[in-house]
Image (spheres, rainbow, N blue to C red):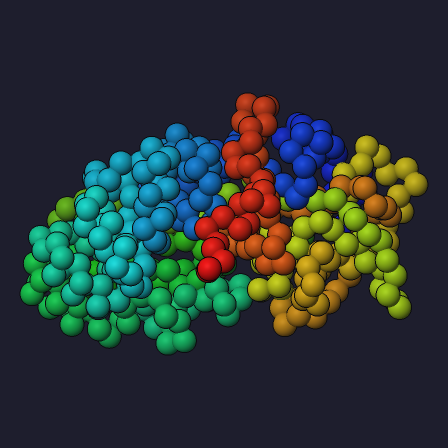
Length: 421
């Protein structure tokens, strides 16, 4: 099978099911998720006491149910995500809590929701401490600390340092402890996450900052969270993080804190992308092949309304043509774009909007193009731009495809809109 780097550029099946069959049954564009891959990624992290899925990466109820059935707990960043978690079978409360609300603010609905359901809160700002303490004194909380430095595969995914809005600035920790005491809130956990794609060198710095912060809080600490950001290999030169070494760094930190405090500390990890990215594929249909000067374009029926990562971050996703064989399909350099009335609607671009080419087999109108590693920050970042309906979602479990979200209809697009009389 022809490849570019280590990725096949012809792909006939997803999880054993022909792409053509999936497209024929569910239409295009359609996101397809392989449940077995999600289970595999959860099992990778079994050394941690708690695997907590950051559902913002993929919050489809069927995906949440799959994650729950394989033993992972869940993180929510909105009242809507709390509702999704409960709808997927998670229960409020528990030790460790099954659902944690992590954010930098409470909007009024999210504050009411966490109070009503008794959801554990991971506070990302001093004001959250004040607001929760006034509404529900006596609760236990976690603090998300910004250690003063960050790291990420893009500046837009860097969640630490003074240019990031995330977390409580490390120099304000003592102030926040005083606020918590005054409001009757017990700080029982700390969370620290500096960005997506963190390497081991930066991780060691995070572990040191976590240990320092935990010692300042004291013996009330019962859990520490390593956050997320585990890298996923989108390109040939990308690699997975050394998970045994990743765990060792955090476990050594945890053990030193246990020795200092004289009791057990639970070690959590909070992956989002790592659990679901590789499970997902976006099946599209080529609807035009056109030459513009020196560039040959494949134009798809999917655009950045379906998968926004390339236009937002210049993100790379592997691509393949769905075909039985490579006969009469030589590789050629192409630009891959979508249908939107927007020059930035290009899947093959670098950060900053610079268009680039991809080596793909010769293809024509009616051929299917599969965009890989699309299970994270795909559908969840979708929009109705150009009045395009949201794509369908399909979960393959035990060799069978299940429609887990129907494609939007034209009626769905205007539902709730009113012309005043």
